[in-house]
Image 1 (tube, rainbow, N blue to C red):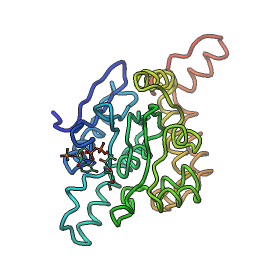
Image 2 (image 1 turned 60 degrees about the vertical axis):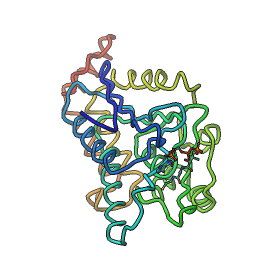
Image 3 (image 1 turned 45 degrees about the vertical axis):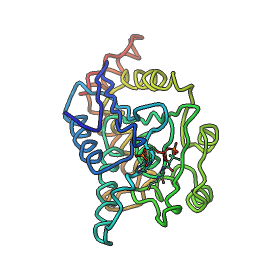
Image 4 (image 1 turned 180 degrees about the vertical axis):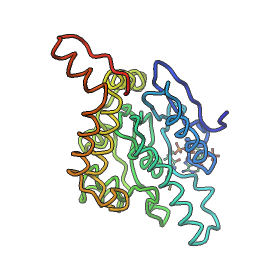
Length: 264
Ligand code: COA
């Protein structure tokens, strides 16, 4: 069904593998279209509870936007390219179902931006992150100037984008760019272990966590409907209160049994 992605659904965990290993999984327009479609599948398929995004092969998660598609674009076309990338990555960021990046090698340029659009990141010991666009006379265009700054702070974000220096897995962990580093062969297993824990919780509440945390780091009022993160949290707290899962969760605690969440 997809030509540049491999997908697999296993115990509620949907793994999307970007599959252009001979081009280090560079993001061309087909990958963007198919990622968009795969995200629609995530939203509409009730069997999918959580998602992993990873790259094919041992070398790269994604080595960037496909540079071969940059040739000859005028300003408007370049802006449309950035907008398309940002829209697909907003869809990841705003997914009600958790989407986690398992970074298995180079995550450069658009690859780093893709990983940062995910709700959180794990990486293998050989991973390398960076925004090397200034090497090409460019800047990040798929949200990287914003999300890198949100994740690691202004000073480090400025330095990495201005120098085009790459950071290894250890430094990525120190910077808070990734939550866990594992040997390459354990990366997917560790990611699935965390997602299995998340899948045992109330899905509506998990979706509300995503919504509220996103508002905390995004200042664009169009994105937040003019509401502060605190307002959003009050509303989301109220929404959770009237779910069956909340009644089940609190009853199970009081009855000293394990809660059985239904996503209602
Ligand atoms: N766009 C298009 N093709 C890319 C690519 C990208 N972003 N990154 C890698 N490739 C292609 C290479 O052109 C090469 O294709 P070829 O075999 O047809 O020549 C193939 O993937 C393998 O890459 P190669 O450069 O030979 O591997 P390497 O191990 O020597 O170097 C990198 C790995 C990641 C350091 C290097 O590929 C690189 O710097 N890529 C671009 C990173 C970048 O600037 N990203 C930001 C883009 S905005």
